[in-house]
Amino acid sequence: MKSICIKTNDLGKIDYLLNECDKILLNNVYLSSYKFKIFQNVIIHYTGTDENLFLKVVSEKIANLIEKYYQEKFIKNIIIENYFYLEEEEQEAIVRITKKIINSPDCTVDSKKDILATLIYEYFEENKSMILEGFVRFRLKEYIKLLDYITELSVYNYLNLTV
Image (cartoon, rainbow, N blue to C red; front, side, top):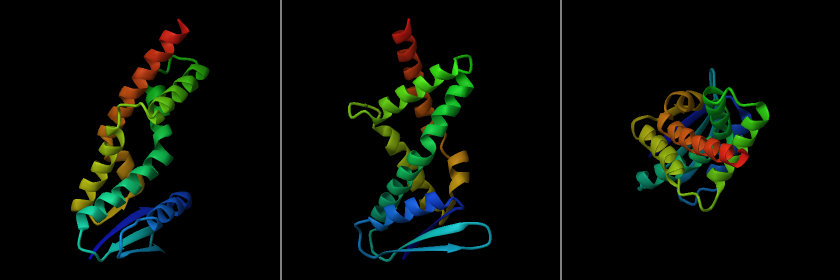
């Protein structure tokens, strides 16, 4: 049996994760959610035999959660840190352009989600539990570098359109 635990106190993220994990199409997956000392915990148990597939599927679900709840914050922080000299309206336009590039079906940066899911998968190969906010803050450097690159492309795109 393989069990993993995701810890957070954000009820929206917990609900999202429970709903996403409830859609897992693997047999022998069981969900539970408990409040312990500090965190609300989402615990996902797997009693099947293909633990690698289980970790892959759960990693993708957590990657979706991170994209939904953190991606725009990362982009805004990148813009504030690197392009602080731009007006607020210009920064907002760059956020929109960056999100449009990321969500474009023609986007060749498919590795964005792969990088994120791989980082999560590798983490769960060695750990049974994850404090979500800590993982996001300290373990996503490769993912943030990719967002930084896409944001940089968006800035060049925006500046070329306005000149």
